[in-house]
Image (cartoon, rainbow, N blue to C red; front, side, top):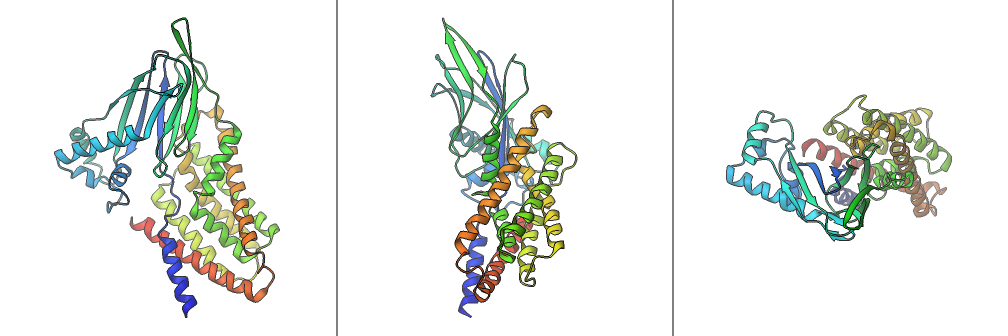
Length: 376
């Protein structure tokens, strides 16, 4: 009885940790020779949550925004500007560049969104600044280690080539180009696009440590049959499937709202965990089912990339690198699971307890995430 109670408490506590739903901020930048500019659309609910210090009671629609009084909505826009200034830093040669911020008129925006109560409110923020009197690396620094993920799309005015896409890790900076100053004149040149390794790293981090729900799914596969050959077969089927839907969503073949995909992903975790309680060996149809779940998870992965606006000629490297990184992340999770449980693998009675207990924990967490993603 004590073990059951401990299991339930543990499951509820772990369930308080939200499954990974990446919130991303996409910044479009233009680097001119004399000045630079950028445009970003911030989700109003995201800013509200950060200003409130955590999750709010709002339901994700713009009803709360439309009902704000004039004084409060102006205060909220002030909070939005402060949020952006505190987290976004543009530098040349390590020197921060001052810049202007322009936001829409909050009262006018309220009127615009009032007629669409089921949609979220996006606040369009424009930034514009000049370079300091010097040269060096042109960089964007993102000073938010716990909030959304910043992705920068940028290009140098007048240069040939498409927009370069760079994801910026929490609390770090990304190099956009170089500013050279010679004989009183300055020229800005664009940096290279992210390497294949950069995208592999991004995909890996999407699993470890950021993808709690995907980690739970992989652990559910591990608990049924802790053997490398069947696990790698399932992992490969999962990767091929999510690569297909990820690519199709990024290319605009179809799209599925996140409020539909995310609860279904959580339910797939519950299903795999509960199935472990009734199966003792891997069935052929389980691999096919994992493939189907991979198609579903790929739609969730697309939340990271679908707004990157990568030019067609540059889409292969990001997709390939990201998917390879995801597969490596899954293998890393499996390797860690083997290391932590190798003493009990092969001992039927002991492993039975681990399989049942672990599967129940995963099912509880997945069920919590399902309810949370539907209700909140």
